[in-house]
Image (cartoon, rainbow, N blue to C red; front, side):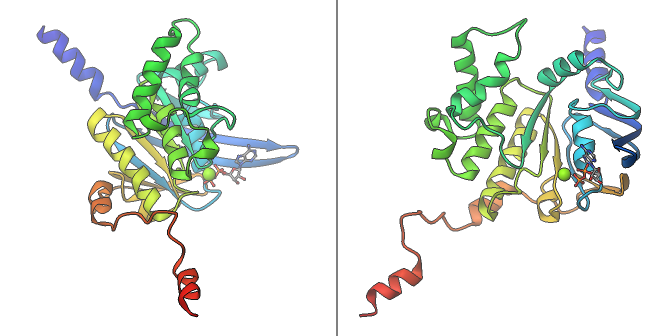
Length: 276
Ligand code: ADP
Ligand code: MG
């Protein structure tokens, strides 16, 4: 019993990500782009890491490798104790579907498919130990409810606002119960209030479920919702520090005035209508 508990502690104190001297070179004909030039870092379970840096600094390249969507040119990547830098593409895909949920700037939802079916999609890829249809529905509904969209499960993406579409994408990222969520500029297409709402969901999932969050953003005010800030420049890490004054999305939302309903005409139109 004690040995079991000790083993559990050892397992959870192992970093979720360890990368050593990671490089990535893109070959463009005769031209080479060195997108990562030797990146080393560790990320522990339950951290909320914001990766920031100017455009072209290697953030997305890093996320693609961290998310097992691509392999490094050289260097080591250990994910949850498993060296994935040299595994086959099939094995990489399996690790990805079991451990990682993705959220992108452009939501990446299937347009002619309901919210529920979009969220169920990752479950369909688990062919070997797949779930029956009723179980998939149940899990997808639970995911939609976790992001506050249970009542809109039958809506198509074009019947949902940008913020709601991003919440569907977060539900889809959650449905396989990943240990880590990777989000690349998730608020890039959203207004201020909706951005805070989305960051509130990430903060809640991180705190309540212990999901590790790796958030990529070039906006400093969004990065401040994290616990740790890593800055990239020219394919290297140039800063890695704790966030001193962390923002709390739930508190900020509570302090905002209620959202204005869309039906109210803009003030200019009202003035014109009462002018004569
Ligand atoms: P960021 O996300 O910080 O804007 P990226 O990782 O997208 O940076 O890009 C880093 C560098 O690698 C840039 O110079 C970019 O043009 C280049 N790059 C990114 N993806 C590719 C690709 N698939 N093929 C060729 N070059 C790429
Ligand atoms: Mg990018």
